[in-house]
Length: 181
Image 1 (spheres, rainbow, N blue to C red):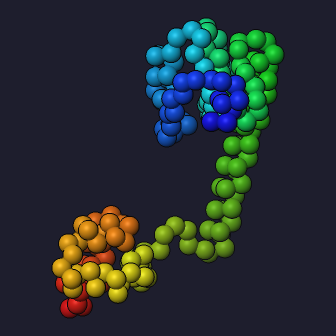
Image 2: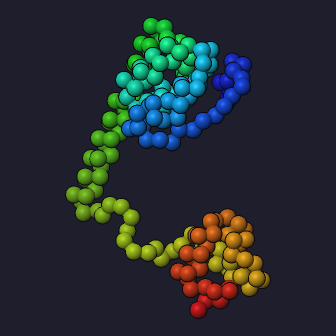
Image 3: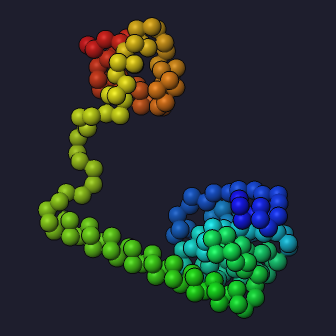
C-alpha cells in the first residue's frame, strides 16, 4: 500500500492467490489478471517469487506482461519490470535465487524429518483425542450461558469460536444445559 501511495498508483484492487505454486500460473489468479488487464495497467507484487514457483514461470509471466504492455512492480525491491533487458536479467537472477532457496528448504526439511524418523520420533499428530481442548478455558462461562438459556450459536459468538466447535466440545465433555451428565 505504501509502495502504491508513494508512486500515486491508483485505483488499487487487492487479490490474494492461495493456489499451490505447483498449479500452472495461467490457472491461478494471476492468469485471470492477465486475461482482464489492458495496456498501461500495473501489477504490483511484494517480491519476485510471488509471481511463480520457478524462474521459467517468472520469465514467462514477465514476457506476457511485456507483450500486453503491463508494468510489473516488485514492491520489496522497488523495481519496475517493464520488459527491458535490464529488468529481465534482474528478474531472472532473483527468480533463480528464490528457486534455489526453495529447493534448499525442501532438502533440509526432508533431511530433518528423516533424522527424526531414524531417531524413533513419531511424526505427525498423535492418534486419539486430545485431553485438553481449546474451549476448556471457557468451561465456566459456557456453563453460565447455558444456565441462562442463551442459545449455542450465540454462545459460540460470545466465546469467538464456530458453532460446530462448541457443539463438538459440549458432546466430548458431556455437557447439557450447563451441567455435566
